[in-house]
Image 1 (tube, helix red, strand yellow):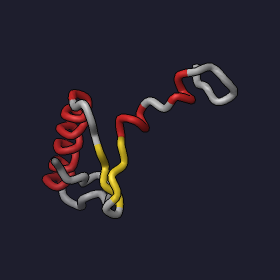
Image 2 (tube, rainbow, N blue to C red):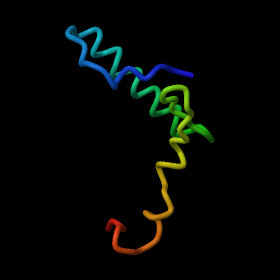
Image 3 (cartoon, rainbow, N blue to C red):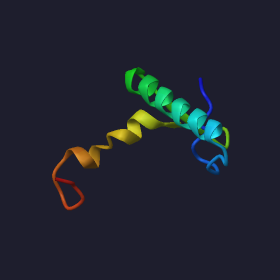
Image 4 (cartoon, rainbow, N blue to C red):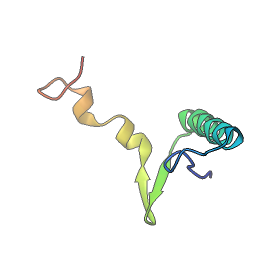
Length: 66
């Protein structure tokens, strides 16, 4: 479990920005290897891995991307 620190204001000092960036990269690395990833919003878990590969992006249609 880790805090998400990249959704707020940009820190006004270099050390704060470095911390934000390193924690973000660590979270990305762990999430890429994890079987399940959840983001808590107002106490509600959001399944990030399910959102990362929605079915409508996998099949051709008017909303598919090249």
